[in-house]
Length: 131
Image: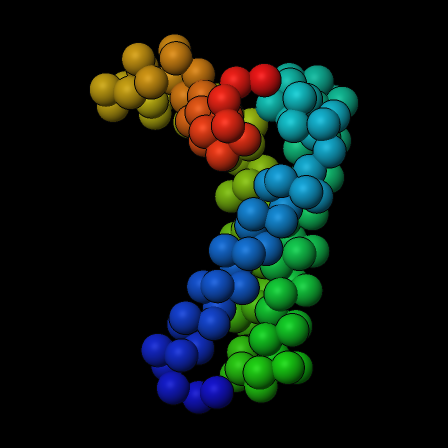
């Protein structure tokens, strides 16, 4: 696979899949509940969750390189993995996102539960109603 558009599409699908695997089946209840806590336990939960993102992303990129012969560079992979780990470490601490929402007209959405509220609504509609 050498066409740039095909490579972009394949990498996008791999990263999207790895992201959702890390955020849902790979994330433990403990990580989800404590990754934003301002404690050592919270920091450890945050880093373990970010590490699952990094590991699953690496696995997805290895599959692309080996199975589909996608031309990936070591530098690109390292930069991508660093970005995935650091951005998830930062975002999942939630303070910067809370500040952003409060200062960009999204305070009401955040007060209503934010993305967790959206996840719950989507889960309930797929499952056939509230549980």
